[in-house]
Image 1 (spheres, one colour):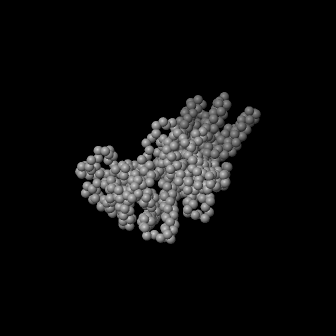
Image 2 (cartoon, rainbow, N blue to C red):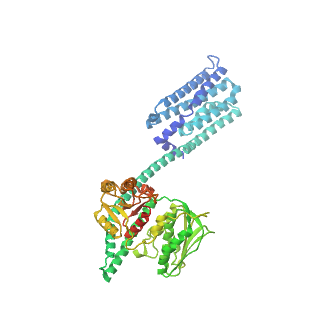
Image 3 (cartoon, rainbow, N blue to C red):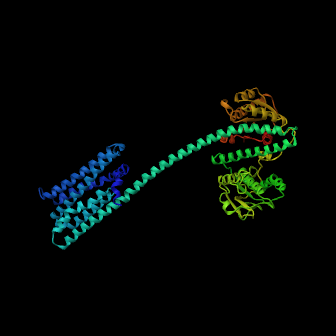
Length: 607
């Protein structure tokens, strides 16, 4: 270990730290030595004798004055300057030489004090040893200085005691030599123990800087990837939306042969697969980017079970399966929307991968968790380790799109982590599976008001022929094809559609005091602005326009104009502000027109 010390001090950073530590606490010696010099002079000197003691005391005291001057000079220098490698080396050398001289002069002072005052011998030996130990400890960070200090202090007295014939002085001399040797060895090892942590600290700082640089590069690469993915996704969603609308128009045509219908059905399956892929990837992107914030509240499980029964009952029956929900009065604390998405994924998967038997869903009060059991294929222990990974599919080696994309359980796991909900799996191959969620049960006696928007979205159209009858709709879209197709379909559904191509066009329409029931707008509208600008502008004018035409609105206390914003972006910059707007829904393209109609019907209830 001693061999490493010189190398460690060659590092200018370590040397600068050692120098600063050595220059701390210098006032103690600068005060102690002059006081001892004066005391010894007063007790022993009768001018001009003893001459050697006088010379030793003067040299010791003068060296202490130089020591204090060095301390003052060092402190008066700018910190950056005295930390330079060359300056640090010079200050250390000056300090080490001063300490060596201090030790040597102290050794001679002790020797001549004993000669002048023989009855002081024991006091001088003990005092000198204590002083030497304190100096040794203070300079221990410098291996060379610490190694020589004991030898320089003890050398004059050791030689003098060895020349004496009595055994007492010989024993003390042997003690001095043994102490000098052991402390020289210990000093080097102790120096390594001090210097190595300093070196490791700098190495840790270097690693931290490198890690931060790598993280910044990774973040920059991830941001570039996200920006590219966002732009690519937007560009891909726009033509896909056009294809989807054209296809739905084709479906409504009455001039379709049976052969064409078979082809159309296959196109329909593939379009749904592509839409599902975009939606799943979007969900993962939103979760990972932190754009989804859970809002914990009381949730009545029975209400949710009833909804799932209506939602999945027909699907289960079409496969000849039973679907059972155990009645419960339990309330839990959870985000209702996120819990809905988690359980929807689990129940849908259970039905999809079960061929005989059925699916059983229940709240297990004793275990404090919801369990979704099926009598399906089961999952082997090997596959249970990866079942929550993206694109993990056990029984679909050929990657058949109709069997799903392998993203559902990945989203379930992310949503569970987002709400700090423990999720688990119990399964055995060919013996079915049980997925469970551990939830916090709460006491609740009064049911909460159901989410009106979600209820309307889950229902089918109230009217088949004109579901949007008499709905006055401001529609803003900068893409001509999408604008033409959507407006045609909306009008066919019974809506009165006012079509605008950009923000300025929409503002002019609003300023003409036309009354509208709802705003439907794309998010990106070129350089003129965004859909958020239109929604806010329309809402500012909404109350004024209503008053000017003397519309009787006494039965409706809600003066907020409902709005739906469409986007092809996977990461919308104003997503959080959009979510905070009352009665404003953000929908992602490609969008099935039937779902848009349901969303418009739900939003129209607030107008």
